[in-house]
Every structure is written in structure tokens, then in C-alpha cells.
Length: 562
Image (cartoon, rainbow, N blue to C red; front, side, top):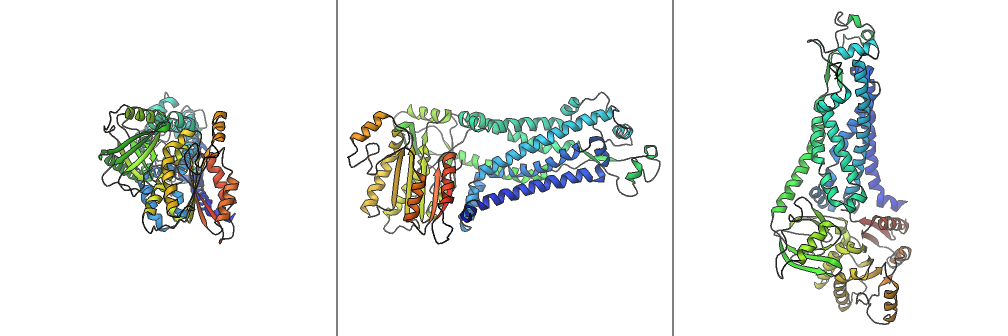
């Protein structure tokens, strides 16, 4: 339990605080509109639906303030650098940025639904009151504003007005429709199945957030909900509501004066909007900077390696960049973890064919004449990830699945460069590396790096520093027979490495048990770049195999998120 708190405690604490603020705002504003005297007459027409419309609006303001911040990548990288002195637990929270972004989005979706449904009821009740279908007070209130010296409460100013007419002709109505449609499209296109299979649909639809925020800022200017302005003494609310004939005749019963509230949404969202605008401006500046190709290599398994050079570009291990190729799409930016080490004078990415964009890029490069420069490439980054913290741990477990090996290529290369120095300054004394692949060809482009590392470690008497295990998770019978025939060879038949390839999936119980036994007092960082299902397994194993005794082995789980 103690280590669960260490691993996940701060994350859940932040979520609890966020939820508590949401609940407080909802309850606080609900009772303002449900009990406030200034809304007495408004409530008489609308009932509790008034509070059910306005309380979610307050929660929406708060969450719309938050929604942009987790996707300001440069801001997060700046914070990550600022938190270097604050311990790994604080920095880990920044790796949950997309999870928090989704959580806030779900709250916005829920509150929008409540807000919209309540206002639909409000429109119906405003309409019925104007038509005289309720009591005398409702009808009188709805007729206010017909004379020159009066202010109105009911937005239906004519008996011929219909709810549909009001919704599509008022500022609040039309912007509300636009906001809701944008939100529906954004949320539905963000579903996993669409994002994975039709990324372009997700990408373009997500940019409706610009229309969403524009509509959001304007929405409150409609001032559709109005409150009584002359509620102060000598106004006698209890007496006036029952004696309509005395309105305007007695000093304690002046004709009620109504006005819409000052729009406040822009005050909540203006700060994050400015920050995001600066973020996009910085991305544009980076996009305009020249990027040159040092080398272009088509690796086995349709993996494209790009070695790029850009003035002033500095990276750290495990970081990622966003790439844009205007010849394919001027708007699409895709994240790729860098496979180069900080010690190199270029930065590289390995790109697997995994969708329309990557397939088009690989096809363009394949058609280039020998020695030619590739298509114009925009580079935004680098950005920090959990893998930056690898060297902060005494012992690290690196787990890559398929192309998810890329951040660890950067880390292992950097280790190789560090050991080329006579006295490498490394806090890390042991690394366990696990790579899971479905087919043998996926190993090919990375095996050469492991061969160099294997040889280098042995020459320096550091063979125990790096323990790596490769797992082939999919194979056929003919391949299994071929492996059996060559089993006695010194090197592996698949990779050419001395470490033989394992078949099937790792027994994580056994692996964690081994790491704990070999490092009885260590703090172990477990890093994954791979699927969510594997993340759940490893996170649970980190909790299970961490000892409650602070002097014994502790496992900390970290996952790459894009």
C-alpha cells in the first residue's frame, strides 16, 4: 500500500483536488441560482432548471480554462526542466498530461449535456409563459418590457416567437448550437478506433477547438439569463409577488428591473488561450527553421531512418519531436521518439509504416535519386518524456514493444558514448532491456546497435552492466524448426547476438523477482514504450514487487505518452 501511494498517490491526489473543485463550483453556483432573491422571478418561470443550467456553466468555465494547458508541449517541457530539482514524483505528473486532458474533456462533455438539456427546458417554459399557459405572475413577468420604460425578463418578445426561432437567432442560442456541434465532433473523432485508423479525421476535427473557443467567448454576451436589479430595500419581495396591481404604485413595489449578467467566460479562458497562442507561434517559428538531411536509410521491415541536422538543436535521451511534411499535409504534425544520442552531431528518427502519412513519406523517400535531399521537413521540439529520467535510477528496466524500442535506442547509444569516455559519470549501475516483437524482421534494424554494445561492454569488462532479452511473440512452425536446427550456434539465428531470442511473452513475475533478487536495496525505474495493456501489467508488478521496507527494492513505473 505504501509503495502504491508513492507510485500513484500524487496522481490521485491531483484528481481528487480537481474533482473537489468541480463539485464545489457546481454546488456553490447551484445554490446561488436556486436560493438567490435576485433570481426569484426568473425561477418562478423556469423552476429548478435555471440552477441546473447555470451550475454546469461554472464548471465548464473552470474546465475550459484547463483543457488547453496539458497540450502545450513547450510549457510542459519548461516545467519538466523546472522540476528537475523537485524529485521524480513531481515530474511524473507531467507524463499524465494526455490522461488529464481527456478527463477534463469528458467533464466538459458531461456538463455541456446537462447545461444544454436544462436550457432546452428553459426555452419551453419561457415560451409557455409568454403564451399565458401558466399563472398570472408568469404571464405578467413575460409581458414586462413591452413598454418603453420597462426591462424584459423573458427573451420571447413576441407571441409569434418559437423556441427554434430564439435558439437560431439569438447570440446565446446560435453560439450554443455551434459549440455543442463542435464538441460532439471533437469527442467522437477522438475515440480510439477513429484515432488509430483514421488519424487525419481526428487531427482535422480536433482543430474545431478554435471555433469552440471563439463561440465560447461570445456565448455569454447573449445574456440570456437575467436577474432582478432593484431587489434591494425598500423592495418587499414577499409582498410584491402576490400583489401585482401595486407594481409601480407603491415604493416597496417598483416594477422589477432585469438585466443579463456580465459575461465571465473570457476571463477564465483568456490566459490559457494566450499561452496556447504563444505555443503555436513558437511551433511556427520552428517550422520555418531550415532542416537538412544528413542521411536517409530504408531499414528492413519498412522502417525509414532519417538523420537530420538543425541549427541550435539540443536533445536529451528519450525525447521526441513532431515532424511535418508540407508536401503530404501542411497541417499534420506527428510525434516520433528520437533514436540518436545527445552526444551525436545530428538527431535521428526511425519511422515505421503505420498509416497514410508514414506510408506516403516512405514512398516519397523510396523514389528519391541517390544522394538527393528528402522533402522539406518541419521539426518541432525536442520535448521531454519519462525516459529522460532513466539515469536518475540506480537500476533501470527498459521495456519496448515493436517500434516502441525507439527511446531506448537513444538511451543505449548514449550509454555507449558515455563508456567511450575513460571515466563515465553514471548513477545507473545496471540496465535490464526487454524488447518484444511480433516478427523476426522487426529486430533487424536495431540488432546492429545491440551487437556493438555487446562487444563494447565485454571489451571493457562491463558485461554485467546491460542485460537484454529479446522476445519474438509471433512465429510459425517452419521458423521454429529452423531455430531448433541452429540452436547450438554461438550466436542467435534471428539477431546474430550472443543472447538467444526468447519465444512467446515474458513471464513478468519471474523477471521482476529476478531483478529484485539481484538488486536487494536498489531503486528501480521501470520504463515502457508500448501498449496500454502491457502498461497495466507492469504498473501492477511494480506495486507488487516493491518492498514496504524503505531500505529494500522499490519499483517506479514510467510510461511514454504521445
